[in-house]
Image: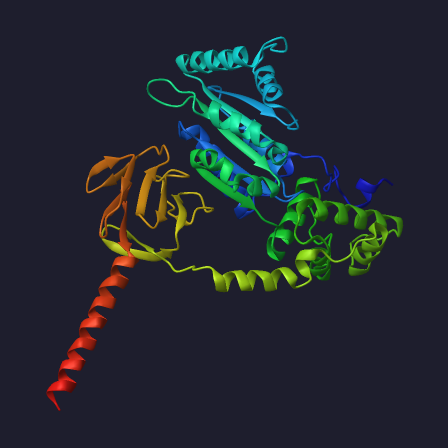
Length: 414
């Protein structure tokens, strides 16, 4: 009997090669894909996705590519240890050119003409760079320059950079400030928590064809997380090795002992994120960073309040998909309908190319700086915006007036 037959599987559930068919949609992966999809909706889309080795970035990109419409033309560059000229050649090669005997000026002209031609034909062009952490500063600067190619109406090249956390460090360099200013969205894919990891394992086993649950016993999951830290690639390696160990011992289910045997076989130590050091650093970080909420959104339908949510500075996505921070389950709301961006200057709402639009006081808007008390209409739902900083200021003024009154009373009573 083979390995697959023994465990009632039709294919290997924990292969290391990226396969979109096995992709588990954690909230983080769904959010990252939504951000990538936004490059299609928004003419000046420029998105950066980072994640640790084995976090599923490449699989996510493949899933994104399989769902692109026919009006989207894309290039994927994965070999990134290139000079600026070699990078342009790689991009043009992906678009079907043979640019290897051209000078840099000619390459830029070819790319510019190609983008304008695609725009004239109603096509959207996306450039995807995987393993972008290996790009030099000069190549990143080249990407900034080509991201600015535009017609008289809008930019014509959408860009997605995906890479390991080192990419974030590169982008934080003062020399790349102009590039970062072009970036519309940045997102980091972290490891799976224990609940997500368990769902991930069971999801892959089900996709692999096993119809009976319980292949991994309940007490195995804590150990798996302890040694993998929730990193998908490490989970795959450990689970596959555990299956082989159990198969060799003619066991039908994976026990705690099989996981321990697999760990010994791999000569692994506990993952660094589970030793407690990272948790202590996170707690210190939380004490140092101000997480105070500045935006309040009250959701209503037919004038009846449904919920109230508050948010710190940053980006909030609104839509029908459960992975949004503001989740509105209604057919009139698009999957990713709009976004709120809050910072020290206020809160801006932007339509993400929704079907039914965004309205403020019965006027449709694409991008609008909200004022305290504004009512945003999405289909049959209303979102009432409150600037919590204004309320805090008002409360502070009232408190100050009360103190002055108390002083007056105390003086008068002398």
